[in-house]
Image 1: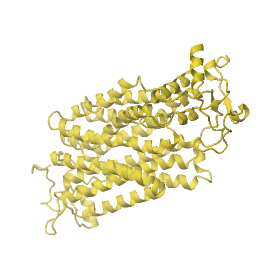
Image 2: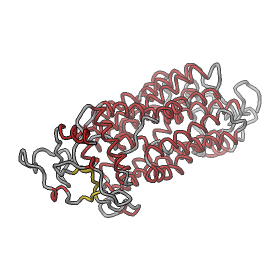
Image 3: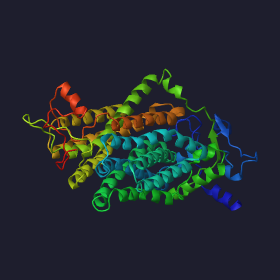
Length: 518
């Protein structure tokens, strides 16, 4: 212990801000050189932490200068380095794995539609079950993380998702698949805990940029899932695809021994020794000196309440953000799930005026072919330029203008899809549309916690995530299935007959793709 104290005295002392000053502020308010901060000034608004048994704070928590620091101060002083790069890869791996479980929905639906002869409503319900599971569990995983730790909550959600993802590969019938995919969605609801843990180890000046960049792992996950489908689906089938899609979750679970618990969580729960050990570890890996002083925590304020979102200050912002998040999720997931259908129907999008399109049975299906997978891969790759454009624009144009630009260009790209366009033109339009809607999603994710008060950030994001999930369910549960139905002009009476499955004439009997009557 004496040797440790001797070594600590040789390290340069890092000076900290006074309580209440911005951590990135310059020299204003600093003490003159050689003069330590006053203890009374440093303790203003702070509450020193005591051990649970009332014992005095260990000597490691103090030094002769009587300086104090919070976890936030230590993270700012240590900065961004090797530790944060490792953490980016590890937490990004969890984000990537969850993206794969989401992307698989657009591939699994058409396959089960053909293999199990599912009507369109059941295919849509299979997708909706995943989002319903996420919506139910999002707040639950947040409570688990607050009570038992960010690392614990993240590990449990990853293991839960991996287990039921593997079990989905053995589903014998539709009912089992529906339940198991809902349980997978329940686990995916804990995915945002990886971003929460990641953000708590980032210095303030790097936080927004790093959170945007970690979304690259989401794009990597979607691309990797399509590549995996191209390799696995033609030979091994969808069961192997479901099983192999859980491999990144298994890798993350094996690497969790390196993942540290949040130092902020340890301090707030009274585990000062563990928090200090975590900070020392970060400083050692980054090759910077560990700050000296006594570890303290800011006085706890009451947590955000739901009614705070409707206070006069935030009422208008809350309503607008709910609409933005709902529309954003509806547009993003709707486009992702609609893309395979658009590619399948691109050949028959035009119907001549002399021949009216025949209504088709909802059991009729078309499996995805190699061209469909290739075009799906191209449109999935669009998320990379979308993130880069958002990263470039968000600080130059501002958060609001960036979101407006992304949503506007997305809408412009969808308008031509109402008409008959060639497959190449359709792929380009979907590519651009998905790039900008993905960028708008990330801009909203950065803007929301910045505009809302700190005490309600977690509550705000939880509520807005529920809005996203409701929008995703809505995009999957639209009441009319249009698969196999060509674009046509029809009267209200004819439209009603088509929706009821009644032929307009004896010749208009629905036929399957093989030509046999259904």
